[in-house]
Image 1: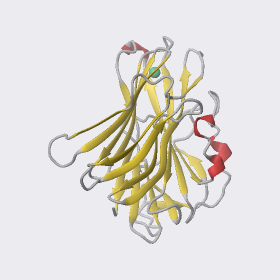
Image 2 (image 1 turned 135 degrees about the vertical axis):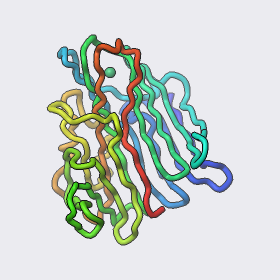
Image 3 (image 1 turned 90 degrees about the vertical axis):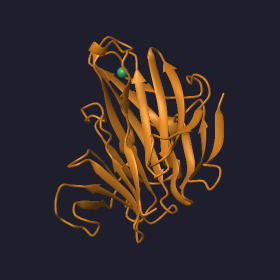
Image 4 (image 1 turned 30 degrees about the vertical axis):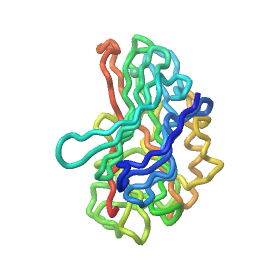
Amino acid sequence: MSQSGIVSWPSRSPVWSFSWNVTDGDTEAIAFSNVFYRGIKVLHKASLPMIRVQYDSGNGPYKDQLSSFNMQGPVKIYEGSPGAGFRFLVVESYHIIGRYRLLNRWIFRSDGIILPQLYSAGLQHPSNHRHHCYWRLDFDIDGASNHLALQHALTGTDWGYGPGWRPHTKEVATIHIGDNAWAVLRKGANRGYVIDKGPADGASDWFGRIDVAITAYRAQEDLRGALGTAWDDQIATQVSGESVDGQDVVMWYCAHLSHILHDNGDEWHVCGPILRPFGY
Ligand SMILES: [Cu+2]
């Protein structure tokens, strides 16, 4: 059964507000929509529509989707603090697919940092394998237009956004370079998010070939969990070379979570990017 809710946190003078839902069918785990930080829009929608798993043993591959059907218990929402500095709000769902246990956790910090995290444990087959986790981040920094996506390179060249920050003006699907940092900003305003590669996000390979794709928002391209197969993420179908300069930008972020056999599947592994605000 699907679940949904509206969050305004903290209830007195909210820092974060958004709606969320989990459905069955062409699902995308927890889908967050209309995400605002301190009253300024950040994301039109954020979700995890696709996980592709590839085994060295040749079993599979698989495409896993987190849904209300394989979710165990309700979505949990709770808050906490690591001590000084900031507080955080967690929205999470726990799923079982075959022998996998998957925890889909989103952390919204009071300092504006967003941590989408996927935790995984369990082995479907006794073989090393990789989970390729695809987050779809439909940014709406200050609204649905006038965005720019940048990739950071380790160079002193300045394209007008600081040394090494090179704008991607056309749709692109590519891999990380340099220090693996990206940004989506609102042109003309020094406001946006830096997207850093998470510490356990691994490397692309022949099976999961991309780390990031930047596309122009098209309503008909939001296929939720229907995009992709076990063999092909089909993200290339959304990358046609269209201009993304000043458009409404969607970022696909892929982490490549490696599972090594010798831990017997008992250990939890975690992956996911780090989203840091600037100018909010
Ligand atoms: Cu695994």
